[in-house]
Length: 313
Image (cartoon, rainbow, N blue to C red):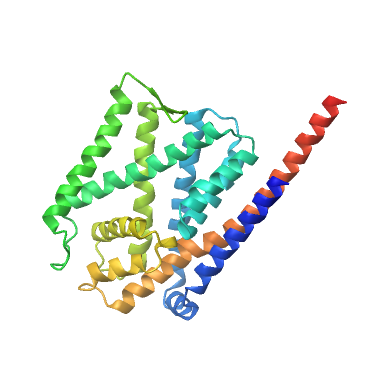
């Protein structure tokens, strides 16, 4: 009974969030933005988006190796894809945490294992962010407007700090003798150097591909390191505001930092197209995959219950 109520609540929650997301979009602008691009540009952008999602799937495959759980790759891949699409559109609380715990638990993983997978995924994402942002900010590859309270020099020092934090984690994974800690009944195990290096590569690659997609949708005069830097700044702004999918935040940051290079119309068209290719289309696919996963999990649970009943008789 409780499982059915949880399932019903989750479906209602997701449906409401999807409705609010769709309601806040101007579909006429979406249509105009997409029609303004060549088919080859959109196809190339789709390929970049697909590559980025494939890289993110590697986060949980790395978690599979880290935790040693026995779920087959064919089950891990769709779960990670669905969680990432929902995370981007409906916040990390829905996709990254709630949905991950729900889907993995229904496939038989226990709470500590799921927690470790989630933790490794979060660290992988932000490790890549710190390495990239640290490099872009410290090298002054992006210039902030004079009106911004944080100047270019301050941003450079933030970059140094991010690089130091990322390097500290990598060095700890390599040289730290104590590998295990306990916090609130949760066991924290420091990954080995090979897994840590894989985290750095996957995290950097995923953020780089996201920026590459926006870069492809802008005119040829766009400077890729600058686009990457603006995306990294907008990501933090989105986290601070807690707005699902960062609606309006991404656009505001890009317009504020790049309005001297591109017209508002050009930037808005590129960002709308970016949202359609990287957010909305994968979300539609993820909704369909999620329904299939729920059905498979229910079938698997019913089969397990029958096996237990046979053993008792």
